[in-house]
Length: 151
Image 1: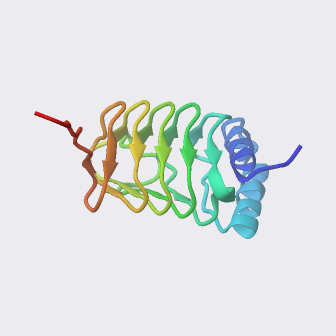
Image 2 (image 1 turned 120 degrees about the horizontal axis):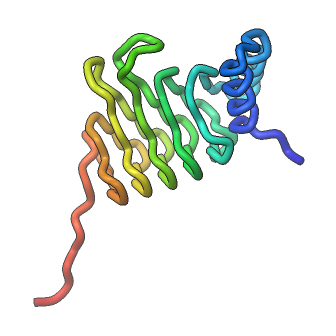
Image 3 (image 1 turned 180 degrees about the horizontal axis):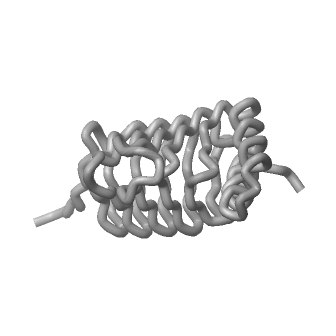
């Protein structure tokens, strides 16, 4: 069995929520030293979150909740302009894909939600909610429009 950065992150979150703070801090440090990823133990993540390319350079704010079967590529930033423990969070739904280099920024006075099945394009900058199943790209991120052929 190969130990991944996402599994180490999940373990650190589990230790934190069970009030085993020393272990959670050690695991967070291991992830930082090996993968150069800032993965906070205060975040709420599911065991099947997958950090693609070892999660190299991923930075996550502690006020993040990530659903099942989420894939996060390298150099992604999930940031929010609020304090740790605030009621405002970034909510990532189930089956979401976040492309390499994407930045998701939650504003300080509101939560930000990425809906189930959404896809965030590489290097997109997301500052608003993304609807379930929506594909967003660009700076700032905008939904892709469905193209019709003919007529």
